[in-house]
Image (tube, rainbow, N blue to C red):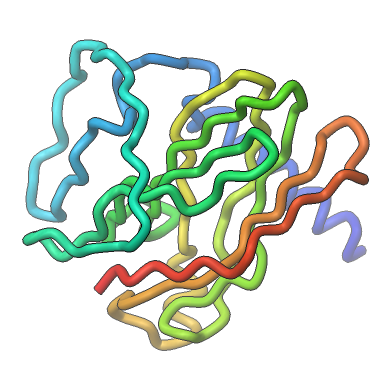
Length: 187
């Protein structure tokens, strides 16, 4: 019975990612590194004209801007996979608050990217992130912090998150890369 429920939830998750994902629309202009995070009171922006994709600048330390968000920073760069933190949206969407990353797969391998050991304010919470990146593909990747997990742990304000990335070659699932723990101060 558990396998059936797990399979159903996995299928629902995959269908949601496919229908909401932007991986099939490279250079669509939405969600590129030049996008500014929206504040909860802003009206949703209309469709933007495609802009030239710019590679995010690499910084060694996170620094806060006037809005309280962390500047773009490269948080993982190994074996041809480069992941840059872009923005945090505390309101998010139906799933919950969203952390937006920009992923560049400069390798010749297809990778499945997930997170492990995820915590909010040092409390373990389950995020929703599992995306496949083809060789040469660069695109945005949202990580959703599930509202149910925040509610179950009485978390109303997200001050910081910590996690590690877990990358598997899609074809073999044997070649695994796990990052060091990553800490983002979002407060």
